[in-house]
Amino acid sequence: MTSGNVTTSVSDGSIVLRPGATLGILGGGQLGRMIALAAARLGLAVHVYCPDPASPAFDVARAKTIAGYEDEAALAAFAAAVDVVTYEFENVPERTAAVLTERVAVRPGARSLAISQDRFAEKTFLSDLGIPVAPFAAVDGVEDLVRAVETIGLPAILKTRRFGYDGKGQITLKPGFDPQAAYDAIGRAPAILEGFVPFALECSVILARGLDGAVEAFDIAENRHENHILKRTRVPAAISPETERRARALGAQVAHALDHVGVLAVELFLVRDAAGERLVANEIAPRVHNSGHWTEDGATVSQFEQHVRAVAGWPLAAARLREPVEMENLIGDDVDRWHEILAEPGAHLHLYGKAEARPGRKMGHVNRLKA
Ligand code: AMP
View 1: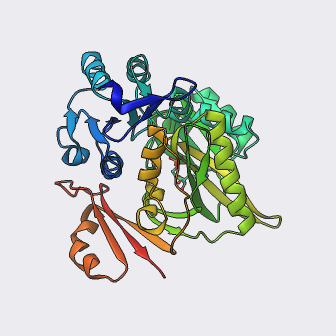
View 2: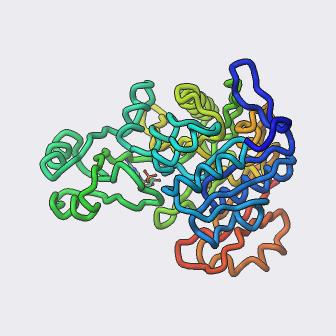
């Protein structure tokens, strides 16, 4: 901890930051960068820890550590230099989190990380809460896969339990598939088989939970993916008011069950059938989320400020939609349109300062207010 006068403790001993305290951020990508910008606006100093010397968040932080997540000496020095640690990605290695947690408050906590890092633990956790998920089974070999397909049916999706993102580490299985080839295709890693959900649309609930357990959910976002990467988010989503209410309640239930402190996203499928609309939960992200970028311009508070408030132990802001909005991710060469986007009325451009626009790389986003 940096010094006594920038933090105070509440009754249970938890640390509450004061302006001037230092927020440590694990991970230096665009999410870390936007958390850092929000923290700076609230008078906090930011120290970013990331192995990549070209991290976009370094540009906007007071201090940086360039070191691996396994470097325990560097982690200990980082913990000593900051007042609270948060992270921009859920695949924080368990040992990294443990080294930090022994020395400094890490928010969100270990349970949020453990559950969201493992798709089988995540699906089990959600279904234990009574939240609908796709039928699923653990797959640890070709025989498991064959058995799981017999139970779950086809089409189905085989996903690695860990380290999957943006559609990586997953393969769709259709009738006639070769079990050995499918298992080889995901690297013979511990996996999960999920029944295919015939969704009408994908949406997400993003909320913040404070240190005191208060929850503020944003309006539900409707998401469209291209090549497995989020392309557009629009708010309000084309869903019924009852579905909107259920999605918010489901998000709050997840956050409370994890004792989560910070922003959290739950990715959802919306299925429409004769019975009406129903929600099926897909994935929990224990962090700020790409489908929440619209909040920077379309809501009364951004997800990044809300996250900073939560992890600092501060009151949350009321999270209301100000105007209908659509977020477009600028992926790869899309970013070359920056000049014309700047000229568009109602368009708010956000660029991440990445030097090279490789295909599939998130370079920025634009929020278009629709009012
Ligand atoms: P995930 O990596 O689990 O977020 O999955 C990436 C994308 O694959 C999702 O956003 C969906 O478009 C699709 N997908 C994943 N799981 C399923 C499923 N069980 N049924 C249908 N589509 C899925």
